[in-house]
Length: 112
Image 1 (cartoon, rainbow, N blue to C red):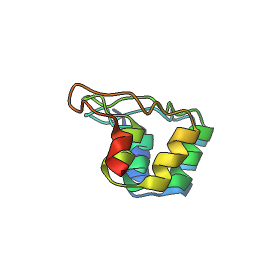
Image 2 (image 1 turned 90 degrees about the horizontal axis):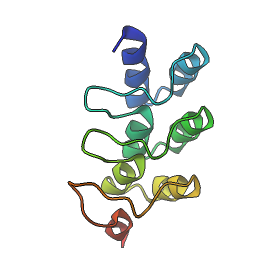
Image 3 (image 1 turned 90 degrees about the vertical axis):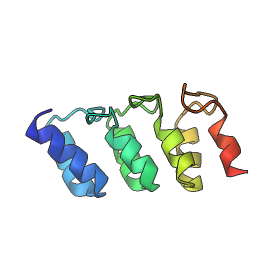
Image 4 (image 1 turned 120 degrees about the vertical axis):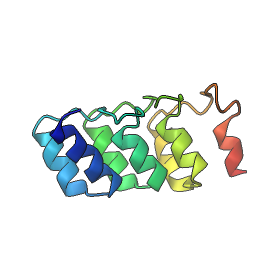
């Protein structure tokens, strides 16, 4: 991973939408990932940051991209109890029935 990719992911982690947008404008791909294959969209979902998720999805981020253990952005939002983020991701075609080898149940059930 190069310094631009690290800066992009760091900006996503700290919810710096301006820097993320600037780096996307400069050509950074929205689906780059860290050493654990966590993407900027997954960081945003884990924080419940709908503004960041909207930015990333509008620039082509893959809502179904998985980290190294198979977790998607939807799973991160569910795990952290961000109901509005879950609803947002579902409206953007996140698969509510997708499971991983680590988590073998429907994440939406966690919200009930």
